[in-house]
Image 1 (cartoon, rainbow, N blue to C red):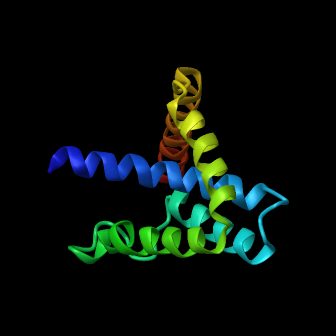
Image 2: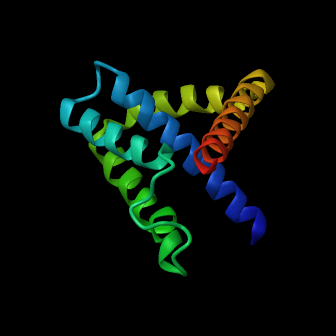
Amino acid sequence: MLEAAKRWARLLKRDVVALYLAARSPLTPWPARVAAACVAAYALSPIDLIPDFVPVLGYLDDLLIVPLGIWLVIRMIPAEQMAGFRAEAADITAKPRSMAGLAFIVVVWLAAIALAGWWVLTKRG
């Protein structure tokens, strides 16, 4: 069962990337482009409709809203075109991740924390 959940999560991730690609493609019908952009932006955004710290309901968007949005947008895009976006998304998600990008994000967060700490300490004195 755990393996099935992991597979579902990988397919979901691939489909979010495919929707991002569909939203950027001029060949995608414009209503589908707008919907794909909204779903991909929501899925990739760190801001949730219901914050994850809310018990049970916090994961509702992750388990229901995002997959439902993906399903609806996929139905708006022609099947052949969606197959192409999925193939391209599979190639993108299979590529190794950049450790330099990770290091950059960590440095930015550490700098922001240090700056906030410095600001708090200077305001106290």
